Image 1 (cartoon, rainbow, N blue to C red):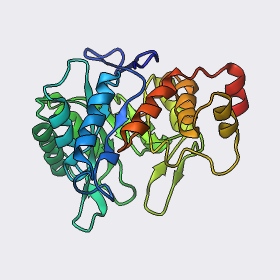
Image 2 (spheres, rainbow, N blue to C red):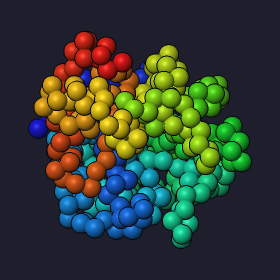
Image 3 (spheres, one colour):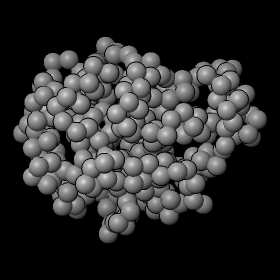
Length: 294
């Protein structure tokens, strides 16, 4: 099985762009409950990574605070030495406490520690793409965080810098501070508005997608199958029935048709579910389907 979608270029126009197929894989679900500890079925977790890459997935999303360090180690065990076509994208800006809480880890010294840790655990000399995840109000100023990222980019530790969990205003600020290669935000068929919840989390954003399209920046949706599916009877379910597909598959297909700059990274801990997600790339939605879906 291969991914037929037209490849996407990240950091288009730069000296070292990255070309990836338009269905990636997010590794967060490979960890134990609460995104903590070893997977319940380690052999299956390794098989999922190998099957994804063998099927044409060449964009893997990870973070050293998944587990902690579980997904990075699984990637190495399953895929190292890496294919030249494989792009491994990681995130920094957060860490985990022993109570499994998620907290900011975003001072310049923190960010450098995270990058060094990712380089070590992924066995890389340079991280190809790093998303700086913003952790809400009270954090280190964005300019200070990005300044540290761009400094490590100049040192050769980072190839491309992206942003995650950003509002339109934060993305605008980031673009004024330097070259932003990509954005990773919550986005899906049922979650397209820009919201900040009580924890400072930014979700969705047609406004963020519009900005990305204006600047030619790929948008990588996360949690598109968790928060991106409407509840109850809906148009997505109707079109899914038309194509003998699941709503999750239609959500992926909708993302692939919504914009050529969208790069879905649905994650799963099930090999069967991975194969279902891969089949979504073969669904060809018509212009009428997309108009009906809205």
